[in-house]
Image 1: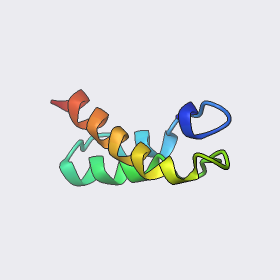
Image 2: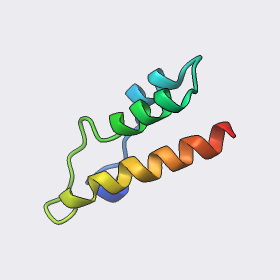
Image 3: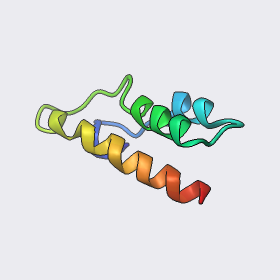
Image 4: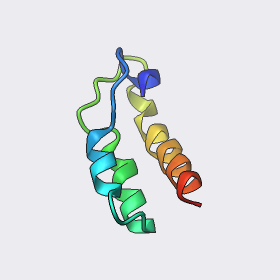
Length: 64
């Protein structure tokens, strides 16, 4: 998530939400949790919704 934040960060909450139940609902919740606590740069704030979409796509691909 370094593309929308001044430093790379793990998505610990997202990881926790996926433990034991990688359902479609859990994946969506985990994807939305990726932006919690992020500190987007001034010109990247509008890109946080893209991070959610990309995270969801990646998570769906990982469990397929």
